[in-house]
Image 1 (cartoon, one colour):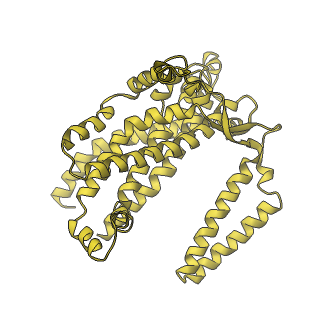
Image 2 (tube, helix red, strand yellow):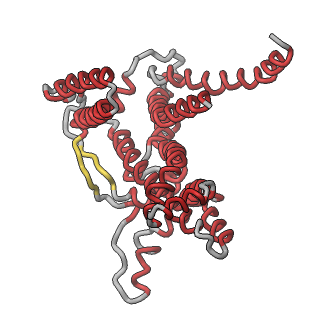
Length: 368
C-alpha cells in the first residue's frame, strides 16, 4: 500500500466509522426493535423486550386495530403517483415556456423557484387557509355573486377507486403477473429465447397459482375492509406540487439548454413539425432527467411528514401518511416496537425506489 492510498484511507476512516455507527448501526437497531414487543410499559417495569419476530408487521397489515396504517399505505400510493405526475407535467410545461427565450426569463424563473425556499410547514399552513371549506378558494365565486364552492378539500370524506383490502394479495399478484408477461414479451422480441423461456415458465406458474387461489390464501383480514383514493388528497397534492414543480422545472430547463440546436435543426430539415421535434428528439433526450426527477420526488413523497402535519394536524385520517403514523405510534402511544416496524417499512419503500437507480448509475459510471 503506497503512502497516498494509506493517507486517503485514514482521512476517510472517521467518516466511515461515524456512518457505520449512526446510520447503519441505528438502522440495524431499529430493525431489531421492530421484532420485539418494546413499549413504555415494558420499559417501566424493567423487563427486557421479548423477541416476537414479524408479529408487529403482521399486525400492521392484518390486525383489526391497525386500520390506520392500511389507510396510510393506500394514501401513500395514490399521493406518490399524483404528486410525481403533477410535478413532472407542470415542471416540463414551465421549462418549455422558459426555453422560448421569453422576455424577463430570469424574473419568471425566480418566481417559479421561490416556493422551494419555503419549508413544507409554511406551505401547509398557507394552503390550509386557502383550502378552508368556508373561506379561501371556496369563497371566490361569491365575490361575483355566485354560490360559494362546496368542495371540502383536505377534510373531504369522498373516495374513488374503492377496493376490499382482502383482495389486495390478488391485485398485487395480477400486477406482478402483468409485469412478468411484459418482460417475457420484450425478451421474445429481442430474440433472447432462453431468458424469455424461463420468464414464460415463471408466468405460467404464477398464473396457475393465482387461478387456484394461492394469492387469496395470503389474506389475513377476518372481515372486509374498504379502502380507496380519498379526495382530500387533492389538497395535499396541489400544495406539494406547488412547492416542488419549480425544482423539476429547473432540471428540465437545464436539460433543454443542454440539447444542441443542431439536432432540432436536423429534425426540421427532415420535415418534422415542432411537436414532432419534441416528441422524437427532445423528450427522448430528457428521459434521464425524468428518471432522476421521479426518484427524488418519489422518495420525498414516501417519507413526507411536515406538510401533512401542518394541513391535517395529525388527526385527519383522510390525508394521513406512514411518517405521521410512525411518530404518533412511537412517541404518543409509546409502542416502540410497532413504531419501529412502520419506520422499517418506510425504509424498504424508499429503498425500492432508490437502490435500482443507484445500481444503474454505478453501472453506467463503470462502463465509461
